[in-house]
Image (cartoon, rainbow, N blue to C red):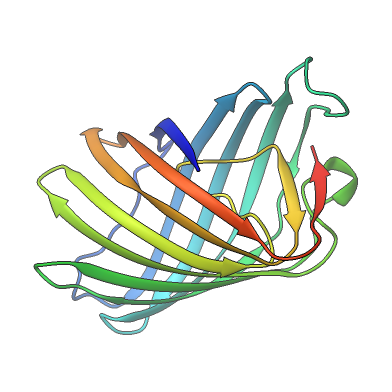
Length: 199
């Protein structure tokens, strides 16, 4: 199990329509992670359509900026487009606890030589429970995937291919406008062989 402290900042305000609205949605967000392996920054753009108050779909293409640590063997710094992805989203909002389920599929179009793709299609199915207390939102997540997916709270300087289950829990706090901070603990349990592509 790993515990991470993070700081995320949106470069542009995220468009969040009211819960009952339907129609087009879009956002552009900038975030990053730094640790002993180096720094990874992601500019994520997304456009979609909210069909009902419970169901939506969207697509996006991330741009990665990776600065590998000089102490990390075999790692190099690189930048480029990530794999384009499509998300199918279902959610149910309740005063006690909110539930959301997201299925994501990604096409292997990014440069695998730069470590931005494994060269094969990937999928992820993640379920989330959360509850907000004023500006603080606590959450629990569990999912199944054939890759180690990035999240809004953590970007990794590598991509992987191999079945795994993943779990995450923590809290996020909106500090000021488009800046949020928080902490999360996560665990990844792989099945069988895994393949890594380092940036």
